Length: 221
Image (cartoon, rainbow, N blue to C red; front, side, top):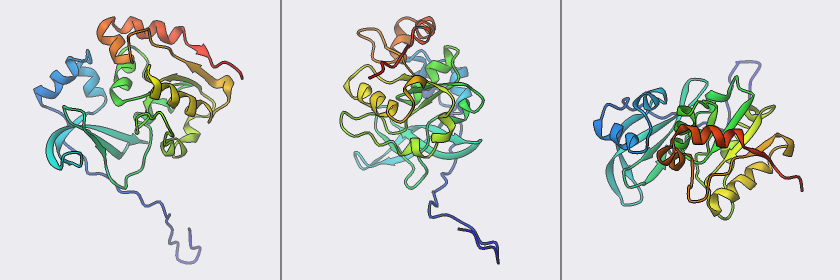
């Protein structure tokens, strides 16, 4: 709303703004990424943070890796991840794609499934990768994050690089239905490799380069 008399304006979507956490300086966290073949300079490029958070899964506090979600340079949300793969995001914060600022001036976008996947594509020379914040489901995928950023994808060639499993394939189908078929390309991971991180660890960046170059248009129904 906007009042032309007193200039009061606002919106019903009053999202919570998260508190920034300190940039990562823990050797343990850098080792975590190194074990996944993700270099320290990549961690630095994504402004990964660290902290301690109460996690609802076991009702305990944990040391966490903080994946920061930026929109136009502003911190919008944070995903917290423990070493044993417990996750949560900031309650009542806006849901947006991870790394969405990277596609602002690009005519291409890779949509993947996980923040670390974005980091792998970036390291392989493809900085225009974003991730869904919610993961994937075999049933109905929540695409509210796409509603919040839909205009940012228009006019771009969209490469779907979701996980090579049943939920990942379902997620790719759900996303593809939201765009024109001619704008979609699919990236298929080799048999036995679930995602970009598997390819990076087991083969190297050249594997991702080849997969991107071999991406196929979506079959027309």
